[in-house]
Image 1 (tube, each protein chain N blue to C red):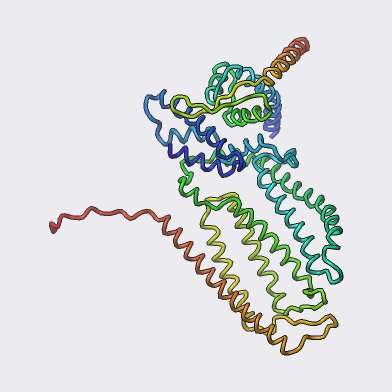
Image 2: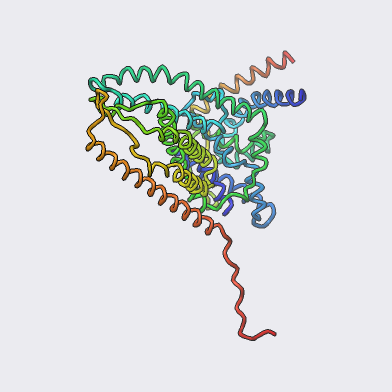
Length: 345
Length: 111
C-alpha cells in the first residue's frame, strides 16, 4: 500500500492540475483491484517486490502521466511534432519565451521613452512583438521537435522506463517536500528575464533613466563582470530546469545557491573598493554637481556593501539548508542495548 | 538496421490499425457497466489485450467526448469509477459497427 501511495504521488506531480486528484483516485482504484486480484490468486498479501512488479508493468510516473496529458488536449499547437512526454517541457519553454518577449518589448518603452507618454509606443511594440513572436516560437518548436525526434530514434524513453525501479521511489513525505513545479517554472521565467536583460546590458553604453534625458555611465569594472554574472545566471537557469525534471533533487537549489553566492562574493568583491561605480550626466552631457554625485556615490557604496553582505548571509542560509538535508538523509544511529551492569573481563 | 526499420514500420502500422478497432471494442464492451480494471480483464478474456496505460486514459477521453458516462460507487468497500455507454455512445457504436461490417466485407472481397 505504501509503495502504491508513493507511486501515485509521483504520478500526480506530472498530471494536469485540475484533474490531478480525480485521475489519481481512479488509478488507485484500478491498481488496487489488480493488486487484490493477484493477492487472491496467491492466497496471501503481496510482498513489496511483487507490488513493484505490477507498478513497473504499469509504467514510470512520467510516462503514465504523459498519457493523460495526451487525452487532455486543451492545447493542440505543437502536438503534431512533439510526443506527449516531451510536450510539457516544450509548453513550459513556449510560456517562458512568450513572457520574455512580452517583458522585453514592453519594459524598454517605459525605460527609454524620452518624449511624450510611454503608452504612445505601446501599439508599435505590440505589433513588433506579434511579428517577432512567430519566428521565435517556430524556432522553439523546431528545437523541441528535434529533441523529441532524437529521443524517439534512440528509444531513450523506452530504455529509461525499462530501467525504472518503483522501489527507488521516494517516500510520500519526501515527495511532499519536493521542489514544486510552479517554483521551478517561476524560476525559469525570472532567471531567463535576468539573463536576457544582463546579456543586453553589455551593449548598452548608457541608460536614460528620466524623461529629462539624464544619462548614467557605468564604471569599466562593471563590463568585466558581464560574463561571470551571465555564467551564474545560466547555472541557476540549469538548476530550475533540472528541478523541473527531477523535483526530488531537493539538495540542488541550496547547492546551486551556495555555489552562486560564493562565486558572486568573489566576483563582486572588487566593487567594494571601486569608486565611482557610475557617473551621471544631464541631458547636455554635463556631469551633475560634485555634491549630488558624492551623495549618489555614497548611497551606491552602501547599497553594494549591503548587497555583498546580503549575498554572504544568503550563502550561509544555503549552507545551513544543505547541512540540514544531509543530516536528515543520514541513517538513524543504531542504539546498542545497554548492558546490565555486569562487567565483562 | 533494415530489419529494425521494418519492425518499427510494422509496429506503427499495427498500432494505427488497432487504435480505431480498440475504441469499437471498448464501446461495445461498455454496453454493460464496468470499471477500468474489470473492463481490461474482460476484454483480455475475449482476446482483446489492452495496455492499462492505453485503456484508462482512453476511458476518460471517450467520456469527455460524451460517448461514455461514469459514476463513482462503492464496491467491496472500495470506491470505483464505473463507466457505461451513453445514449450518444450507443448511436455512435451502432454507426461504427455498420461501418466496420462494410469495411470487413470489402476487405474480404479484396483479399
